[in-house]
Length: 249
Ligand code: MF3
Ligand code: CO
Image (tube, protein in one colour):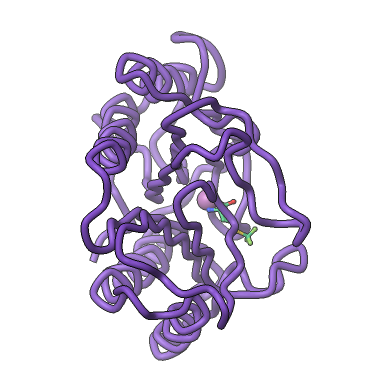
């Protein structure tokens, strides 16, 4: 069953998601060639705790950090490390979650560091636009399949592919609630959306083939063909006429 949040719960979701968006905005300013992914993680954790929130990913199924930093062919769940230094030309996805007064917020952005190849810039733009397409389908009465299909069709039209192993999700008192939100699907199929549902929608897109491999650290997902990937995510609330993006500053 997909939970419907009360007005009071939605207000807390707004706050937790805003904290995530604020810290991601700071990370976008901080990221540069020469910084380690561990430094970004440390900064993210500090900024979350400064806002009286708790990192949502730290300890989640044993995940060892607050932030996921996934570079180039890494799709999601890159584990921060002192040894991993961002370089000019990298396409970097940062995924962050926070819990504030019992409610989760979750969002991700992909940024270009220095001069990246034109195809990487296009990948980033198509992935972000696919999220916008998905959000434009969200409203009370719409089917989840409409949202999923919007991502898939837009990505394919642009000659790229969507990762199938990871999905978006309902979110609230838990990081992952029902429904699961694939980035592919059939229009008119699946759950009917209702006002008050809160969803984390997160397209993960590959420039090449969609298959992924999990690295030996048990977390880092990379494209099997080594092609570059991008990831954007927002936490949103379904409304009567559309959606409210909660993960905004
Ligand atoms: N945005 C991702 C998700 O919702 C991040 C999870 S990272 C983890 O699944 F470490 F918490 F697993
Ligand atoms: Co998520």
